[in-house]
Length: 374
Ligand code: HEM
Image (tube, rainbow, N blue to C red):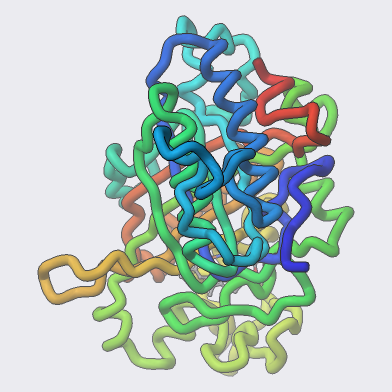
């Protein structure tokens, strides 16, 4: 009952109502052999179809095989339900480098490297990657099991470059979901693109015919940013200041000057002193489509706490995930705006970045991830 269909025109895990848990992993391709890579993608697809249905990664399973060989499933998900597991795959810019797999002619222009943004403190060791898999599920063990088994299947072909666990989705991606809160304590995802807004999704989320190479039509571009939050500093900031920085109230999540969470934001409104009700450096103003030539994206991020940093502070923040039709007209201009002007910058540090082309869905048992690309 809680299985999300794996096959379909678009990949699951994008407009699928955001699950509670994340295990995101970026891989480096370590083989030079294109056929081996394609074979692995085929094996990954079959394993993903099984695992998202709540079954073992391999056909034989964790405990039914011969005693002389390692099992084709690692076993920790035995007895657990599918938990709405979705596995979403993406291809990074480096995969298309000339001389690697003969894909340079198939690289979408939209997969152009992201620029350096003011204030970036990016760590290369936890950024980038040739492939990514976003595993989302309502049970962390199910998400971790899926990534672990894909990594096991990929041994010798790919190696894990970096990965990130997340909890407490920070965005609703469906009108059926309540808006969750990020670690600043604010509702996040109020004005997100939602699964039900099919016209807007066509305009802003899904790659359309003619946008670029045909193999991406029906896909979407993924940007990840690990954003460390300086929460101890934030927690010493007054409630009024916090609300001024975000541009929304902390309780209801209403835009400043309005009363309901979903009341339209009025960027032109002024208070009694003649100052803008939503300050010029407020996050929701700077990220608003009206300030970014109509740019919109589907945010699907998660909170993270990676323990503490040895200096008495929680190593915590937001693992930001956004899907869009073209990052050059969505994430990039919005983040440039935020990086330059956002009052929130005093409390956040971008430490990791990723960009991936997520192809359309796997249409059935004969199809596999990357079939139209390779
Ligand atoms: C809106 C928090 C980073 C883009 C919001 C809202 C909050 C928030 C509380 C208001 C609720 C909503 O409409 O969803 C944060 C925090 C961040 C962060 C805590 C970092 C730790 C980013 C980044 C981007 C971004 C990196 C993209 C470059 C947006 C957009 C909106 C938004 C597009 C909706 C604006 C609108 O249409 O009204 N964010 N955000 N945010 N944020 Fe962020």
